[in-house]
Length: 107
Length: 156
Image 1: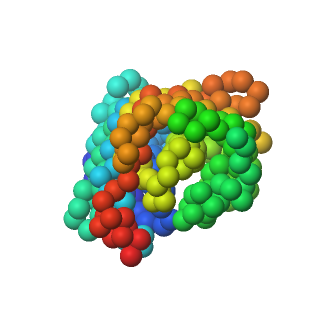
Image 2 (image 1 turned 60 degrees about the vertical axis):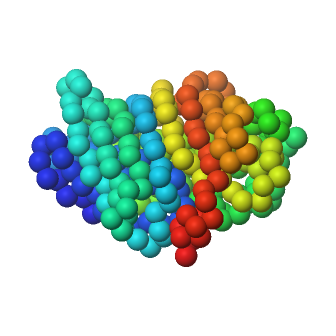
Image 3 (image 1 turned 180 degrees about the vertical axis):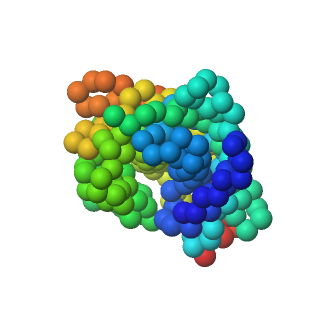
């Protein structure tokens, strides 16, 4: 997976599709937010998904293809954010995700 | 009804490489399924971690908890219907994660079926540690059989 941070609130993840896990879009969102956090706060922080409000899967991504996940984050509190994402494969919408994600310091 | 690993592999054909259910301890077709999944330190998600990773990095990823729940629901679907085609996840609403899961934990998932149509079914339920503490609750998970074109396209 390759993650590119576009701004303080926007990040995009490129994931090669392997297997047939329906939760790949959610995993991509989690990794993208983790990379955004690492860039902003440095090492010693990790993310935890608190709630998946909505995950909609419109079609299965093609194995071997690249899933592009555009994530926009909105801070809710100092250590929690709402991530909204749109996942596309071959220019077709695969999934949309809205999840609440916590940022926590590693112990 | 109890199901062992060979039964699970047969029912979830095509997902063997990503199988996240170890056993079925109770299955009432059309009603409820209770499954087990042991989380090991040898899970592929942990093997990729750097050697100096902190303890927090060894929390079992939430997407895999949800995938395990979805596979449990798929098994209940397979035991409930006569359809040969395996359903796909179409959506999840209201999945809440209550506590981290570490290697060594055994998960107990209970998924209940909310009847839908022949092609779409709804499930709710929870995952807890086998000794009690709640790990995850799921308000609604939707499984559906896609049109043949979409399924073929995904496996070409």
